[in-house]
Length: 388
Image (cartoon, rainbow, N blue to C red; front, top):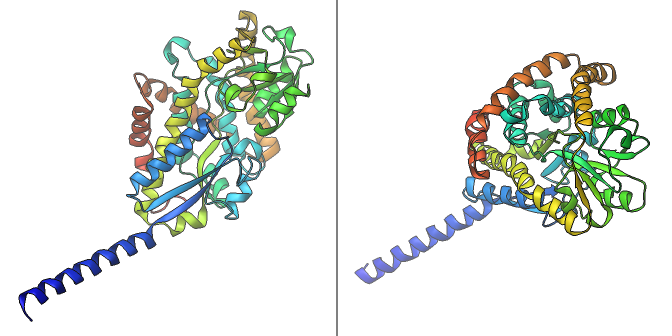
């Protein structure tokens, strides 16, 4: 074989090898379907799309995700939809499924305990502290939580949390007597008990129905994170917002809840990539919510609405309620859902929360928060056994 033929032969071989490698890469790459329950352009939608980008980066392109915002599954359908493989991954809000996830919901419903922590110590970082604490607790201190997810064929790879909850209303509510007879949409039984404590009535309603409920007068208020005023298009039906009560956040959400069969089919490297992306989602969601809160309040003002603070009397009465309600919820979950370890769970969680109040101080960006969550939590998850 002369030199020119040998050169041509080598070129053909190299081209074949490159083509084969590219084909193999295309075959091995996998796109996961993600069912989001928030609309395009919302803060949660932005966080979920950042999660998809981080997943592709962390897996070097082996895993990508296609996000379906408010189309593939509704909030009320995510648990069964991911379980049955309609979506590979979903934004699971456990409060919609009290019988399926009672241990998770118990910890989530303790979020109003941030009202009991010295505000100067919290330094405006209470949301990030609670988010870190509940994520750590779920992974490492709550085998019952993991079992609840496993029973529904879900695997926990991320948490998501809102910013602080306030009263988003069509009428002013600033003192205890303003609560009398008010119909309020709630996202957890602790907020329901708070409403009842002050003479109102609670309404269970999915996020997609809140606007219609307020617009038609079915609701007087929704107890929601304040960015949801703009996330859910509530500006035209909201006139009054009380920013500092009832407090607490919503953090009972398996933000990238993976179908168990999908998780089992992945390599350990791809599972680690999902956890790296999960740390980003766990941080970015509350960060974006907190950043949007003031913008949402400005939008209310610009639309003719009013921002309120609750009276000192109302805040003090709420703190008293929270102290008692932590005991009430232990009894409630024991009686209703056979959660027998509730008091121990809350004690362990309070200790973890106390640690996280200090850990999050000084964090200045979503990326820094994601790195903190990854280093302290996600990097310590054993992908050879988690979810299996």
